[in-house]
Figure (cartoon, rainbow, N blue to C red):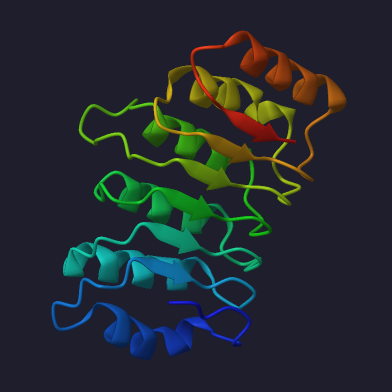
Length: 183
């Protein structure tokens, strides 16, 4: 379901959630909500709907919703720990910070034994200026430990050239794993 650039706010989500997830509808496998006006509250509403409906959603995009922030990522991390179907998550330009990268690293690397590691293959966190070199240890952890991630998009974050070079070198050394890093 592509609802990009349709001026959706958190207040509009009830209708969307009802159409996408109610009545045992499990056919919604993707939700594209980029270029709207959603906040972390809206993200929580969507996460709750996905969990309660047991949706087999594979694709989630919240790109260009600058009020999602770290609180929204907390909700998405909770979803990733419960949903075994999500393979694509896009949160560029959502004003997330190093804190979100740490939360994502913890779930993608199985730090919490109470949750399962999601089968995420593509993670887009680009255009978030709050992602700095402080995220380097978490990014390294993701690259070294996660077994499913193939694409990690980091362009236009606040990583220094030194940090980007370090990440690229690490990826080039790991020949067994096919991994694409855009930074």
